[in-house]
Image (tube, rainbow, N blue to C red; front, side, top):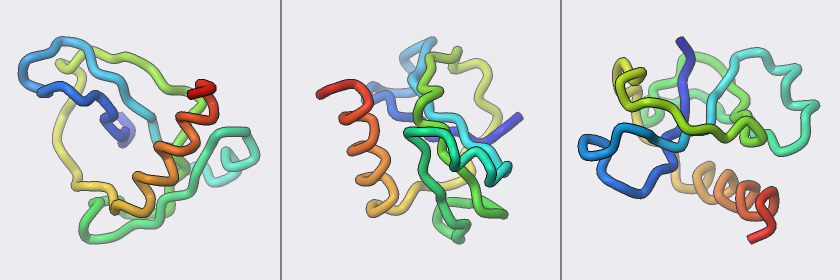
Length: 90
């Protein structure tokens, strides 16, 4: 199990597949392109610095979700969105 940012715009309960950005606590992963460090906070529920592995954007079954940790701060969300747009050429 690992934390992930759900980036699907549709209602989670009504869709079987969701687009997510997985996170890792292995900080050396920041050396890969299209990654971003997220600091832990009460709002996001992370317990340690984590790297958003944006280049590993993937679809997963909503059945794989265990629990909600929290909500990503808007500044981090905006930066991740910008990386996704650049990565996909949007």
